Structure formats: structure tokens, C-alpha cells
Image 1 (tube, rainbow, N blue to C red):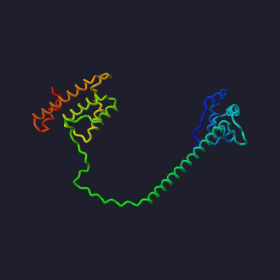
Image 2 (cartoon, helix red, strand yellow):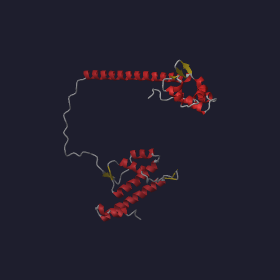
Image 3 (cartoon, helix red, strand yellow):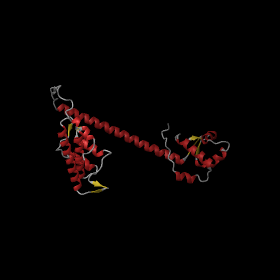
Image 4 (cartoon, rainbow, N blue to C red):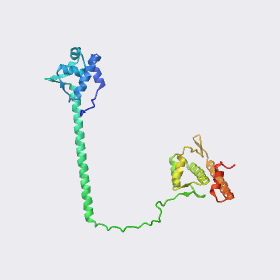
Length: 263
């Protein structure tokens, strides 16, 4: 592959300088330029070779006569002044990039060497610490100290839940109302989680999430949040009363809870 696979084309300049050429002459001129770009700016001046590069037939002498003045003939090679200048610019940029990369690599190597020397100096100055005795872990300890638990009846919205709601554009009133709804749902269904803050975030991001204290993009007054909170508390009280009536067996409560909200 050529070292310079990309050839810049200044469209305005090219168009203005080829106005007197027909389509075949423009195509031959462009094909020769592209072949010249891939060969460091020069091509053999042999007419048969140039004819093959330009993909012309018997009308090649006429085509060459029309485009010959764009090229400089130097013995057995031809070149184009503008194309040579562009190649020189590319070569200069490549040289600068290569030099910058070399300097960057040298600086990185020096920094690494300096850091290694500093670490070695500190290691020599400080005595090697004695290894700590191996701690024996009881086989009776659980592998994961965190366990799932149910949410308490007196649970309140945490600071983390407030921040999560605020991050999602909800007001503090909305956070309070959503937490009451979330808690009542968890109590009713006997849900258990390890991290209740994360469970609340999942609740806020659910596709079934519906605002409580906002309506049609406008905020309602604080009474909406209070009404939602009181309704949730009444709902929880009914659930607890129903559990007391039925007994301690949770399995017998599930069919009643899944039948829908109490009337």
C-alpha cells in the first residue's frame, strides 16, 4: 500500500483549470495524476505507458496534446508541479508527527525510569514490614454478609432516594409520594431486597412509572403529596388488619392481595 493513500483534491482549482477539456481528457488527466501520486510524484514519459494509465485508445495523441501542458517532462519522466507540492506537504507533516512520537516515547521512558528510581530509593530507606499473621476465617460465617430483608412499616424515604428522584427531575413532594406508593406495594407483596435504595431507583426507572404530584407538566400543590401519603397509609392499615384476621400464614394472604385493591 502507498505511504500516501489519500490524495487531496482542491475542487475549485481543478475545475477552473480544466474548463477547456472534454470529459475524456479530464478523465485521462485525473487518472495520470492519481497514478503519479502513488509513485512519489513521477511517471515514465513513455507514451505507450501513459496511454495505458489513461485508458485511452486510438485517440490518445489528441488527448495527450490537450493535457500535455499540465505536466513537466524531465528526460524519461514526467511530473506535475501542484501534485509535487502537495506530496512535500504530506511528507513534512509525517516527519513532524514521527518526531513528536519519538520525543513523547522518550519522555515517557524517562518518567518511568525516574519513578522506578524513586520507588527503589524509598524501598531502601524504609525497613520491610513484617508479614501479618494469617487470619483464620470461621467456616460458619456467611460468604455474603448482606441479606435480603423486608421493608419496615415505619420506613421513611432516605437521602439517597431523594437524590435519585431529584436527578430524574422529580420534586421532593414527588419523591415522598412515590416512596409511599413503593413501600405499600412492597408490604403488600412481601418483597425483599438487599438494598432498598437501589430498588427504589428501579421503581423510578420502570416503564410503568406514573407521576403522582404532577399533572400535564405542571406541579400541583403540596396537598396532592399529603393525600397520596394518607391514602397509602390507609391502604397499609387495611392490609395489616386483613393479615391479622386471616392469621400468620402468608401463603393464605397472597390470593387475597393479588385479587386487586380493597374497596
